[in-house]
Image 1 (spheres, rainbow, N blue to C red):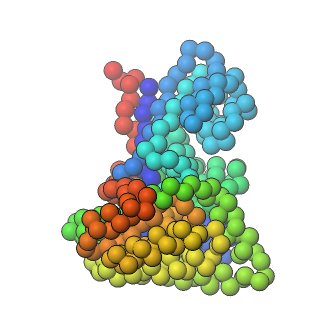
Image 2 (spheres, helix red, strand yellow):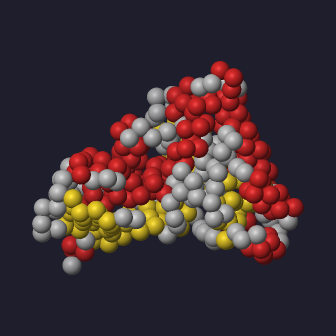
Length: 331
């Protein structure tokens, strides 16, 4: 049995500029952080020539084409595994909550399948193969942020040129400021789940509408915010980083009607009234997790949000990225 894991992620600035309708015209810049919440994948052989899958459902099929789960089907096809395999998955956080779980699942799965085949591949290949499956084969309206965050881990900046080539750079943040950032970022689960593809497709549709062509101006500003946020992290100006989060949130609210709703807006205002400097919905929007930057009165904010029914989730940053955590065939 092979066990692989890959981390979920939070976007820290410039998120959304990796979407092809924007990046293919103007290029992309964003910063993101992998967190110590994971998707685990197990791969093992079967003595019979069938494929067994356990995720939120169970599938037992005789061929690739019978597999209903598109990511698993295409990952098996890409890695050349046709039968006699069993795959299980388990995530520490539910899907549809804005932490990039689908891409994390796919990166972890590809890593496990390649390793099962006796191949150790680069993190860059894992990210690109996962992007190829989601963007080129399945035609999902997504970018490359999630795949690269899951593969590489850490706090990273991503530059994507018009041709889709990605440059990954670690953020040069001091250990002291890293720990302060971890302490001052507070994340809360809203209880709302949503399909990211629906929100992203709406943004793409708006970008193609003549009446909303100025949506690209919003993305220009979001890309700028990503660059300014990087400067803040590397210079240790974390308060200003928190303020940029708020600017980012206000801009993204203008991009799609699906980004927020009156309940989320009320929670956001409550957090700001109770000491938060800035915040936003993590991911495409419409639900999932709210994240805030706050320098003091952390316990007060946590208690206030709990009274509204939100669930706090503590985290640290992950610096391993996708990895194999167990190989039972060696024993």
